[in-house]
Length: 240
Image (cartoon, rainbow, N blue to C red; front, side):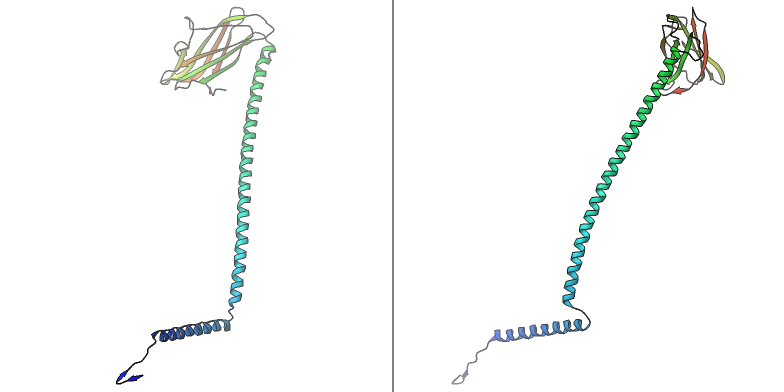
């Protein structure tokens, strides 16, 4: 439109921008198409890739399920093994307890059999058992003595026991009386006894420093029976 010398023109900036954007989009689509065509020519298939990914996802899911199942089986096997192990331990402990009870009963049977019917046929006074037990503190011990007589006698026997500990001190032989070792005796250093079938005697002793015990000499005297003398090696036993 012309009006005198003035010229009026209408500009549309958005149209240019739209055209520019459209050209860019067309170029990108064209480039992507060329890219896909090149991959297709090289043997690549988008559909095959998607299908392969689906197969891989399915396989991964199956492997995860199998893994979870294996873990559950391992946990069950571990639990079963622990239960079996505890059961075996309980059985072993029970067997050990039973064996200990059987051994104890055998010892008791032997003890009472010796009272009822001595192996040598002699029914007099005898030392059935002698033990050296720990006292819980260094150089402290307990001397346990069991005296018996055959049930054939059926009479009360009484008398006294003399105990002497043989050992070495400063490379010299030493004999330690029960009084010197701190035992509980009469004024004459003897331990009295009186029983019909058997009697347990126990004395607590404390050995002096530097004294090395070797043996224990025991003498049992009774007015009616012949004296009994025995020597026992110094062997400390556990309480049982």
